[in-house]
Image (cartoon, rainbow over all chains, first blue to last red):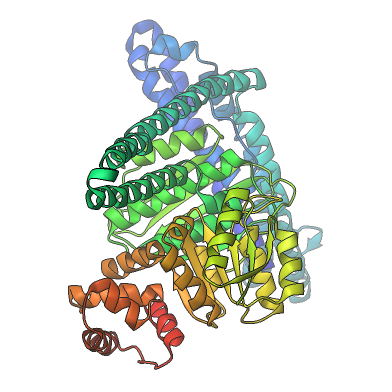
Length: 416
Length: 214
């Protein structure tokens, strides 16, 4: 377990060093395009070269975050025209990184690699070839001139290998730190991006709320309200018939009862659509279990949430997202089994919905439903990632950054 | 028969008390919150408790939680839960012990006095009563999964009423068919679904529900 982690870190250092070695090629491409700008050819080449460089830097960002955690604020999208590229701060940042990375990140990851490979040479290669290496052959501080000293050198080599391995994770983390700094947009620009995003999601929140109110108004108007009017009219008719035709009046009254039951049912459905009772009573875990029981599919739910509740809006957004994903699985995927897992790592609420259906769900289309789910999650800085290759299976992961509130009702873990 | 009633709205509590007393029940305590409900159940040891699911102090599901807690202390204590909405999860929690003597009905059902009083009696007698809405959703699920596709439409109707906890006599009345026809249908249902035809009425309900929840 521990050794595997070390080997993995070393392997990643190796990948990073190779990536750093070839990075100047892309950097040179960009510089070439810049130099060709005066003769016109450059304005054609530059956007492409910049895009190629951006792909490299994006990969750098993904690696830094994926391997060592933390966050990197990516720059805004690259402009398409050469003139705008020249004015783009992110482009110059990428270019600077392309030339600095081999000298900084590349050298950094080179340390454990040199140790390790030098160790490999000393421990596994030199014992067989030391005779051919001639006189004055030093390995580290050992002069290799006999079988005994070759064995000493081999031991030393093993030490170097171990040292390289032991150093690899720390160096990898340091490299990620440097990459995060080199590849993140500056704080001020990040704030601007964030303001832009917040403005968008705030508008979404308003729209969602307005649409919700409109829906409630319409449902009340067409449902309970209309039924109550009909009820009043039927009661009026029954009152008039009470003396002349008691039988007819009785029939009308039983009709009144049926209509009043329908009106109650309408109200119930309306409430369920706004704030599902189990969600209000018990919170997210049990509400998702309740969804599972209502689904026609075999749904397994695993809840690993802290005791206590999440903010009402977060619970609601997560609940309706799961409801939509379950409905999609039932309608389109042809899945038989769905597994839902909920957990919270102290900062992020994570819900995974996996089905064994035929996949091929398109996150950008996916009907209005998924789009609505995305917008609703967006107002809480939440995200929905959909991994659905053709042929399946489909895995949807939604994440909402949030803290759990003080315990009110506890939610146990277990499966339904 | 001694009843403890828990309902926070005065009008409903009053109405329910009167309805129950008119039908020969003795309402020994009518309370309006969960802590008092627990105390009343503990002190009075009633034959049946009729409990609104949403009670003070939190107005969530403390009626249900109080009832389940009381049943842990007094196993088999008959409890009929009333609610403005029905949830499969809560039905499952009530049925989880497998010992019956539980009921779960929409509040609207109390306006059908005869059926409501029947339900209270059934639960008090150790039976199981489930709201038609709970059963309808269970059946819709079974139909969609094809586990009840072997049944004729009539058998389907009978199965629904059985799952609601109705007796053969009640099914006879509801479907306007003879008692022997009901017996024939139930036998056929049990054979087709491979459910053990238990002579005990409550076991029969639980077996049917267990099948539908598969």
